[in-house]
Length: 458
Image (tube, rainbow, N blue to C red; front, top):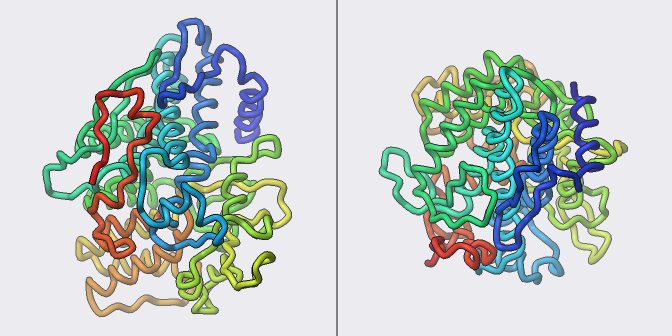
């Protein structure tokens, strides 16, 4: 199945100027289509593949969404030369304006992806039926939910569990746009409600299991992450437990086996690569030692923490050496090294992540032995020690251990640290987690074309 999918991706790029190519508008995320863009079920599937291609682009999940939060959370560092650039200096200092091209690119790419997904949902009813139609719609709903989830975490105040979340979120776009649209920002509550509804519907529609494409279990795993970010640990536990017990996933023997061309048993959702379509290229360029001097490195503080225990095999993810330019020592991130492979796959959701979500959700419910068992599973693999046991003095201590394990296990994978600090209500660069200073500005591309939008003004 993976071979078929990769051929389809290649076919899409070859035919990307055909009827199903979706044009990007400089005013914002909108995609302008005519009714002639879709004439068959093949057009719908090519449009879905095109949706994935933008979703995993360097401006969206395949790049910026991975590193930008890590930079704000001071988990990564950049070179002095890179730090003086307009975009990066704003991100480093948390001093944003609406002309930041990196932030604008992420906003535009994520909304472009949403609109493509909406067009797939619209046209699937016209040209497909039965399980095929449901699969297309389910995948599009998964992608739409994921993009809204990324946007709400960066451009809106955090969700506060147990409260009425009427703070401004982001524009909620759930219909296909064939013209420039103006929408106000929905509330945080409304956006999260739609994300959850999309994922619940998606998991009920998808029956196929194609590597590199969304599945019912991927929807449940993402739903677990959404509930977890909200602080809804009861529902996070339900979804995480379903993925762990029903998904058929297993931890890889080695912590280094995830980034490979062949789809691994630990990967719940990933972007597949072929030589003609290197999905991991943006991340490789961001971190990999293959580039001699990449854009970003692990911060020295985090590098010291991550390599402090020589028995933890995850220390192999970091390499302390002198930079080829300047000579100072830096902790290179080796997670995304190609290691002789022409390309690497890009994992987005993995089993270890869901195990740690289940672990903390158990602990929050005071089911401490079950929580410790999940922590132990992840730690045994990391330390290559099947006899390792977890000890703890109580609930608070166990939760703290699980969170520290998450920090080590999920470093540099989709800005988990930044969102984790917000979830756990910790300061970021000395700024309270719910401060307006941590919000990206709504980009000028949106502001200039949408009179209904309200800016994040501190």
